[in-house]
Structures are given as C-alpha cells and as structure tokens.
Amino acid sequence: MKTTRAKKEQGVKLGRPKGTGKSKLDKFKPKIGSLFF
Image (cartoon, rainbow, N blue to C red):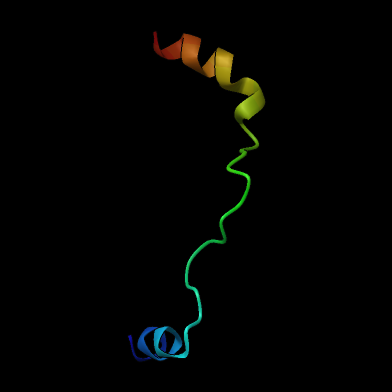
C-alpha cells in the first residue's frame, strides 16, 4: 500500500491505460451472443 500511495501522490496514473476498448474476442461476438440466447 505504501507504493500505491506514493505513486498517487506523485501524480502517476495507476491501472490499465485507456485504449480503444477493443478485445481479441470482438470478432467472435455474434457467436458468443448466440450461445447465451
């Protein structure tokens, strides 16, 4: 927790970077959806 607090105080952004929001599974979305419904 000390490291996290120190990084926040330095203004470093934590976590995953904001991206395009694309997934490797996007091309399979129709098939995945059909399995659920």
